[in-house]
Amino acid sequence: MNPFITIKELKEKLSKKEISSAEVFKYYHDRLKVHAPELNALLELFDEESIKNGISEEGILAGIPGVIKNNISEKGRITSCGSKLLQNYTAPYDATVTNRIKKAGGLILGRTNMDEFAMGASGEFSAFGATKNPFDLKRTPGGSSSGSAAAVAAGLVPWALGTETGGSVRQPASFCGLVGLYPTYGLFSRYGLVAFASSTDQPAPIAHTVYDNAIVASALSGHDPKDSTSLPEPKRDYTKKLNGKLPEDLTIGVIQDSLESDGVDAEVKQSFENSIKDLEKLGAKIKYISLPDLKYGIAIYFVINYAEAASNLSRFDGTLYGARDMKATNLKDMYTNTRHDGFGAEVKRRILMGNYVLSSNHRDEFLDKAGHVRSAIRAEFEHAFKDVDVLISPTTSTPAFKLGEMCNDPVAMYLSDYFTVPNCIAGIPALSVPCGKTKSGLPIGVQFLGPRLSEELLYRVAYAYEQNTDHKIHPKGFE
Image (cartoon, rainbow, N blue to C red):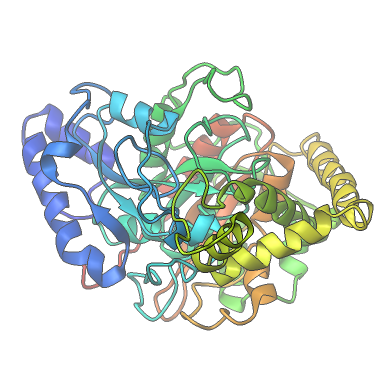
């Protein structure tokens, strides 16, 4: 079987009984067993018997294996969030998205490696070692959904769930030649997702193709009364309008700031410009627009991000969850030692900065101002969508960078999310798809952004682009 077979193709083969679900399971389970250690993509590969408990034999993902990021709860499984502090924590219930995958018949084969508590853009900030990019083992697959992207890119599974707060699905998708979605905030339930920055966290799918991504998104869709941030939206089938054609009279807004930025790699810029030409040939009207407030996105994102992270991670102090310093002789030392020994350097950095901006002396100076700028960015997007149907920009400013290249330069690492952060702040969706490759064979991605609840439109536009161009590449050595 072709390791890079799509979900759509697998479903057709299963329907025609050309292959059995047992054969599909064994094929991918064996591939994970052989190749995942080389990439350090998995924290745990589940045994066959435990996987099939409670799985529906019907549904849009029936018999289709995948993996989930290890900050998404699955009952009876360790949910470590890539942290030493939670390395032995077992989830007492299923996250809603986990439950919906199972009800759709999807098989969850394992839990993936990730930057600790989803804080990172390279997969290097895991307590269990860095994940490697299957296109070049000396490079990052992106983060924080590093293991999820690496596993799909190497053909170890046809889909994976990641989570995104400011680029953690789309950036790895771009670095690994995949399709990654950031949904409208509140579209997919956050119940059972270990919180990092609650106002932007969202679970989301990673897959080989736009159609496959839309299938998994369909399984995740629908209102969840267990999540107070869940939107009152019905379940949807995001594949039904994917016909390979752009909608009539479609206007695509090119974010001109992304073309003028000095920080964009030349090959990324060239692929982006080629994408614009391809879309114009397909019948789209192209309009160049400026969104000047987007340049503040990274700065205000990290102020809000730090503050919410410090608040959310305050619960991990040794009293309720995870590890505890058993040698401490008083409560204060137990708190201090548990957090000092349990958290990694990047998590500590964000907690310290978060408590700084939350302090009474600095809240007005930083956090409140960040909230005002956030509103301005949201308004700027809303104004833009009065003139265009969707927006387009590079997903990342560079191809996958080398492991270790930015570990000691957190500002440079944060800037890798320059294009993916603004829409997360505004709570609007974006979909990254492959659009080219570098001379050395590294994938390059482009992203489509739309107004709230425009996922159906984004999938349709991206599918038309994908079907009429040829940018799908696979890593060598994983055939």
